[in-house]
Image (cartoon, rainbow, N blue to C red; front, side, top):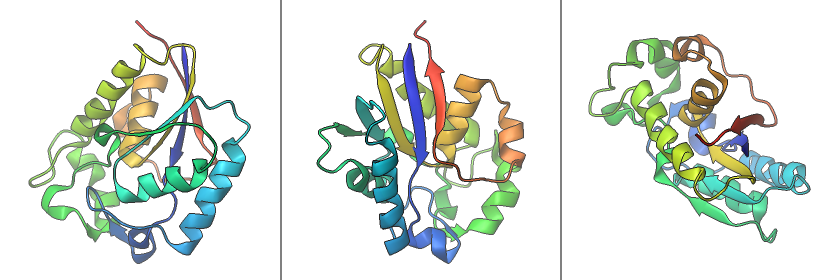
Amino acid sequence: MIQIVFETHATSNDNERGVASGWNHSLLTAVGQEQARELGARRGDDNIDVVFSSDLRRAVETAGIAFEGSGVPVLLDWRLRECDYGRLNGSDHATHVTDRPAHLDSPYPGGESWRDAVARVGRLLDDLTSRWDGQRVLIVGHVATRWAMGHLLADVPLEDLANESFEWQPGWEYVLNPT
């Protein structure tokens, strides 16, 4: 059994500008940097064995600030990236929120579908079982990462996730049972 804690990346410049970054990089704002420090304080005594982070800058920066000097290894993995919006990476966030159900199975132009993104994250989850069984793993990611955890580990239908409004919380916890 692997205990998984999922945390979203902290507030980025694109978040504040209302931009859906997708696979584009975006730096954390001053508010985001403080949120990352708060994440580190919140999880500092939480028996985290390893942190896996998306390799997109906003997630890398979040994990780096949160766990700096902690001795907890931070490993980057591209499979934890946000959904690839293709030609729509970096476009208006409001459009993406309303279009999500339409792209559950139909890829964004030049990108991937949400189901593709969830499957990509699922491949990382499969790989965790060979090395991290019995450990507490923290994952820093994006909406697609959170949807993958909810769908694959908590059996929430993707259709439900696509229609919910995002409510930030201080982490989500899941259990991954090796098969």
